[in-house]
Structures are given as C-alpha cells and as structure tokens.
Picture 1 (tube, rainbow, N blue to C red):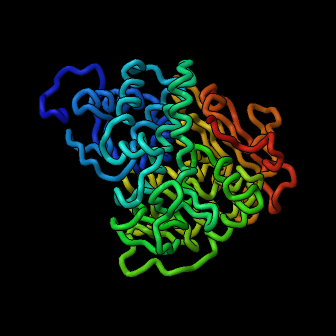
Picture 2 (cartoon, rainbow, N blue to C red):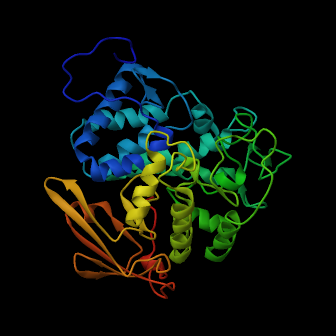
Picture 3 (cartoon, one colour):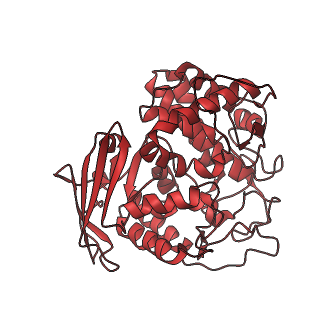
Length: 414
C-alpha cells in the first residue's frame, strides 16, 4: 500500500519501509552503501515511489504512512550519497526533481528558509535544529547540481548549505535561536533543554553547535581557527551543567555535554581531524566504544533508532566514519578490530589489517592503501569499492605527522 492508500503490484524493485531517516542518514545508510550494496537501489526507488505518491520525499516512513516525525529533509542526503557513490539503479532525472521539489516546498519551515535564509525562532519550535538539518540536505543537492553542471542550482543550494552561519552567534560562539538578522532569543542558557518546547530537537546549544557535518571548515572559521575550535570542542567533552527539569530524555550517553545517545552528536568526535588533531578523535572514539557499548541487554547508550547507534560502532570499530553524509569521505579514527574483510559487492573484497593494535596503542602512525604509503587522514568510498587492502599501523603516542598538515586533512565538497 502506498502513501496514497492505493495498492501497487509488480513493481520493478523491492518495496521497503521503516525509514527512520533523521537517525539513519548519518551512518546506517552510508554503511549500507558498503555492506548492503544490493539493497541500496531498492531503498532509493522506494523513496522515489513515495515522492510520486505523496508529493515529497519521505521524512519518517512507516508501513505506507508518512509520520513526519523528526525534522529536516533526511531522505535527501541518502539519495545524494548513493548518487555520488555511483549507484545507478534509479531514475536520476526523477531523483533530482524529487530532491529539489521537496526542499522547495512551503511546509515545515521551508517557507522561512526561502524567504529569510533562516527560520525565526518565534515562528517555529526547534528552529535551530530544523534549520541546521535543512542546511545539511541542501548541501547534498548542491553537490549533485555541480556534478550535473547546473550552475544556478549549485550556487543557490550551496548558499543554503551554508545557512548554518545564520544561527551562529559570534559573541557566545553557540548556535542559538534567532529572531531577526540582528537579534537573538533571550534569555539564553546553552545547557538548558525543554523537550519539544525550545529551539533544539532533543538537545541543547552545546550539542547542536557542532551540527555542520557538510562544512566543518566553515564552522572552524566561525570559531576563530583551529586552536579556538579545538578548545571549544575539548570543552564539550569536559563541561558539566544542568539540563533543566524538562530536558529531553533522549539526551543520554553523556561525556561532559557530548551526548552519544542521540544521533546529532555522532560525527562530533571526528571533527578534531578537520582541525589537524586526529589523535583527539582517537581518544574520544575509543572512549565511547569502550564505555558505552557492551554485549549486555542495556549495551547501547541510547535508542538504537533502526540501526544508527550500531552503525556508528561498526564503522568506528573498523577505523573510520563518514562525517559528511554525502560523498563518501571516510575520516580515520581509531580501529579496535585487528582484521576485517568487507564483502563490497560484485565479488570484490576490501581487507583491513591493523598492526600493533591494543588498548594503549590507539593512535594511527602510518597507513598503506593497496600497499602504497598513504598520508591523508581520510580515504574515499571510491578507493574502497575498487577492492584491495588498507593497512594501519598503531602506536601509543600521537603521530607528529599523520593528519596534521592541512593538505592531508579531510575537507568538505562545497
């Protein structure tokens, strides 16, 4: 049964459901593009069928019903990521139409985005979270538009992909509710959370200030450069504060104000690599994996959310994570496995081998990709999909060279 309540038979694809997209676009769907390649086109075709049936891409789809649960346009990064990674089993003309049409609607705060570039805090609850999520999706469309040489669309959606800047207060250095181009919502407490009644979705300003996975270097610049960015990021993992009596119960798995139990935080530890300090990424991802995941009945730090909480662990255990949900740039972290063979489709394999790995040897020293020295602190999906091998040598002290040079750091595709 489609969203239009009609019965559809003999489709050319396997129809799927239960798309918890606000959660899963971040790591679960990128993991599917590695380990479930045969299902990706079915997922995209299902989303495009939903678009044709209800006039927009799915938000949180369940059993032929659009729940509209959560915020943003999270189907867009999923489709754009599959497109950028070379999946071709869907109608790309329809896909581009669906992405563009969905983000140009008048509903759910998009009317304000189109009119002002941001969502006024007195017009809609959770305005900061909604605006930041739309910015991530729009940056994904910009990448597709550029690949199609649609220059006007690229420039327009690139600007919208950088709309996160509207919510950044240079005085407090937090993302916060904005009433106009020159005024902020007051009073402001970066610790406080009022579930479903404030400017954030299941979080606070400390947690949402980092929700710029599509353009981390832009956020670094807003913070004042690498050193000030790292200082603020260090503070996130250390600072304590009261969330308030009505805080969202979804804020869990806390290290300072870092909340691993909810999905908007999942890329944050990997941001250190963008500022040239990948060893701090290693420290934090090892901490999260060792302290917050177990094989007991309560062995997850938050809601599994249809695979996202586990997908973060799988990718991090392998030693990398896709910070930008579109494009396939995998940022190195700190692997805990010693050896893995990934069946990546088309009878090809990608082998990961870790040397000198231990609890204390958590810092990457050297990397070899297909037998050749590799100096960058990231690698690309296209490198993996060719098949081959990745060798990582670990040590008990941070490397003085790995990922430090600006030329070897990850970067955005905007």
